[in-house]
Amino acid sequence: MTRSLRHLVSVSDFSATEIAQLMQTALRIKSMLAVPSDKHRLRQLLKNSVGSVVFYESSTRTRFSFGIALALLGMQAVHSEAAGVFSSAIKGESIEDTIKVLAGYSGDVIILRHPETGSAARAAAVSTVPIINAGDGTGEHPTQALLDLFTILEARKNRNPGTITLVGDLKNGRTVHSLVELVVRLSATKLRFASHVRLVSPPELGLPAVLGNKLRESGIECSQYCRLERAILEDSDVVYTTRVQKERGSKVTDGELLAYQLTPAHVQTLPETAIIMHPLPRNAELPEAIDKNHRARYFEQAHNGVPVRMAILLFLLHPLGLSVLE
Ligand code: NCD
Image (cartoon, rainbow, N blue to C red; front, top):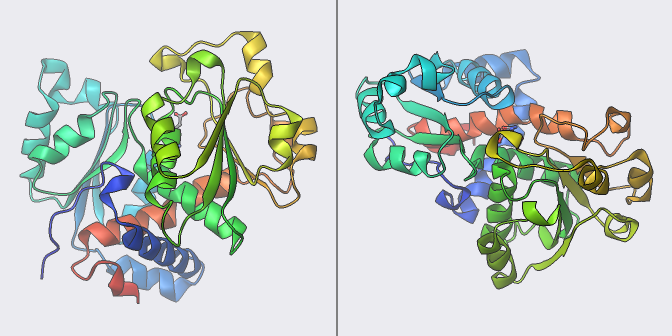
């Protein structure tokens, strides 16, 4: 039995039911990873599969957690870091041609990070194996949003959907774009995890209007601010901060940075049960002084990348899909 071809270009590629199953499987995998015999069992699940990890942009978390996820499922991986320099892209080859060639090599999945928005969709259009978008320019970063959701659900357990405050470079941050798409995708389902989204950014780094409109159209309350204030934080359940994407042309003055930097004083105004997230890497917007606060979840969030990406690989590649772990 082979699995029908599916890609993960955008969080909208998965239905709410599939996302719910993915979350359950990731939770199961997370606990299995702590038990040696279960860890051994996981290693057998995709031991005949091979993945190509093709990154045209720098990465620490996404690249390593995918590499580890592949290994923990018993897969072999072929990596190309700095693919813009070390692949034939430097000789002028299009992403379509590269993907057509890689997909024909009898591997099973291509995990792609590329600086151009829309590149993952272009790759998926010509690929005969699943494409996993590991970040396409300022477009989407769906595996990050799924691990963000996992972190939120794990921390907030069965609490009602709450207020998520997104802070920083909302214009160019693809993790924010995918998270907002996920809020919209799940807004009318049992997995609804946000009822109110607050957007805090310098005016020129605001969330693209199309995403703000999608939030409003799906019945999510949405409000915009250009500085972090006590009143915003007092009832935030999740504060998700992000860095300025300088490599994508975003600029911020020192004054603007101060206006959305999360300080220890800000943290004290958050509810006790609130959590602080960041896709990392961080700059000055998230001082290290906050790391020891019980609300800080960003390292755990990064670590959740392994079980969540393992679940995604099983979903896309295993003949039985996620039911292999039922
Ligand atoms: C992000 C990315 O590359 O989009 N990092 C990540 O994958 N965890 C965020 C960023 O670069 O700021």
